Amino acid sequence: MKNKILVFDIGGSFIKFSLYFQGEFMSKGKVKTPLDSLENLLVALKQIHNQFMDDCEGIAVSMPGIVNSASGHMVHGGSLRYINDINMIEIFKEAFHKPVAIENDGKCAALGEAWRGSLQGITDGVVLVVGTGMGGGIISQGKLLKGHHLSAGEFSFIRTNNEYADNVDYLLGMQGSSFVLTKTVAKAKGLPADSITGEKVFKFIEEGDRTVQTIFQEYCRNIATQIINLQSILDPEKFVIGGGISENPLFVITIREELEKLYMDSIYNFVRADIEQSKLGNEANLLGAIYNYKQSYHLE
Image (tube, rainbow, N blue to C red; front, side):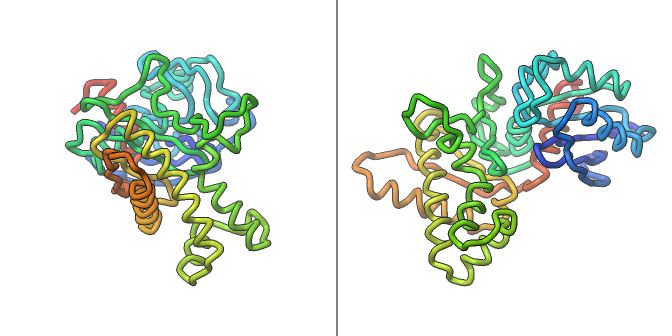
């Protein structure tokens, strides 16, 4: 029963959870994330904790927003709008009466990939997590890059236009999201937006649907363009592409193809980005949260 850690990956749609022991996840599950209040979020987390409370000695948390992992102070909670300027470690410790470690979800993905995944042995790497937004993390000189304001890796807020007024449609978090892909395909096919999933998009492509193939290529080209920008700024050895949509190899293959077209069309001698599919998939955030916990409490 010693050294068992309960890990939460709190997302904008679901809370994924598992009990971690001796390098393995002993059980996994997920519940919907309450989006209305912190109180209801704590209720959901306590219900999960009650299943394992006699079995775990600590809590590891991955969640959206800007967080000071040392102090627990959160500037905001990203998609969890009810989290603003509060200390989540103190709140979680009061709720669970156990040691707690917390880190941003994109940074957890980067930590997970560096610890057990596609960035093992890589000194400088970038993880892009493609989901309902575009998150990620940066490994620089072998360490997680947090930035002065703790917002390094917040790729969702990269602007792709030069208008003065904010327009979320021009943020990378929207242009690079799987949501905008499925929404665009649904509109082109004249179908309800909620009837199209990533799996259905790939099925259309495999069936030779030229309209969907073109939409998908343009979507991947938008991501490839930003990879070129990030390569120029950060000069990583490798990019790792994660998130649910990345589980289909065609996603990374098409990004590579669009990258090559952009390089071929340019007169400049760019350093070419090396991109790879995540080896960890949906476990990246969970493992990163565990690794952050181990670092926080100086565990092997």
